[in-house]
Length: 124
Image 1 (cartoon, rainbow, N blue to C red):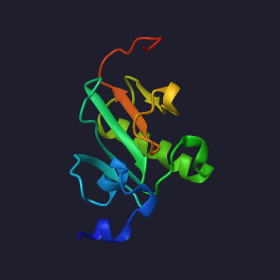
Image 2: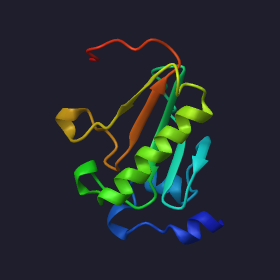
Image 3: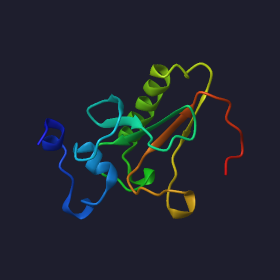
């Protein structure tokens, strides 16, 4: 068991959570940056030249369930990603899909950082 897996064991009730398994090191991901509370990694099905997911290391189903301090840490990590990817000045989009009707497919809070090209509005 790697050090990350040892520190971030997920609850028995969410053992099938894809993102918890990534945090635990059980499923590979391409990391971009990591903090004590967040992990950012490349989306496996990118919708833009830059498409990175930022997740809290603790399992939370929706952004409304997250403590405001942790929510701020997620946003700070997203901005770090934008800077590291060189899109902080040209522009980028942050997206939280919340709930089934909001398009959420993995029920572990995650912020999409999208950029690297002009993004149109409205989406979908």
